[in-house]
Length: 90
Image 1 (cartoon, helix red, strand yellow):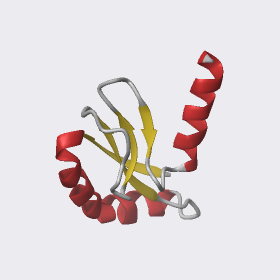
Image 2 (cartoon, rainbow, N blue to C red; image 1 turned 90 degrees about the vertical axis):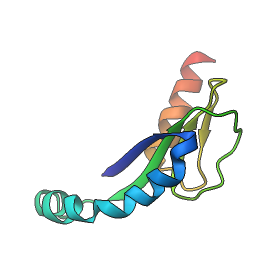
Image 3 (cartoon, rainbow, N blue to C red; image 1 turned 180 degrees about the vertical axis):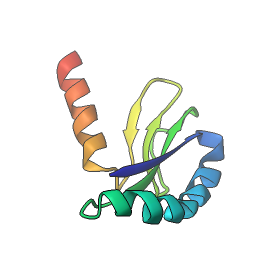
C-alpha cells in the first residue's frame, strides 16, 4: 500500500511534513482492513527544472522538461512503472 502526497516542487517540504499526519488514516482504516499490508509513504512532485531528487521522502518528480525522475527510495511500483513506460516508448 502506498500513501502518496502530491505537490508542486516548490511545496515539497510541505508535502514531506504532511506525510507525518497519515498515522490516523493508516491506523484506523488501512491497518484495520488490510492488516498484512506494508504501508509506504512518499511524496510525488511536478514542476521545476531539477534533474535529481535529494529528499529521501520524495519518490518521484515529473519536471518541466517532462523528465521522469525517481527518488533514492522510490517504491518498487514506481520503478517498474517507469521501466515499463520507457520499454514501451523506446
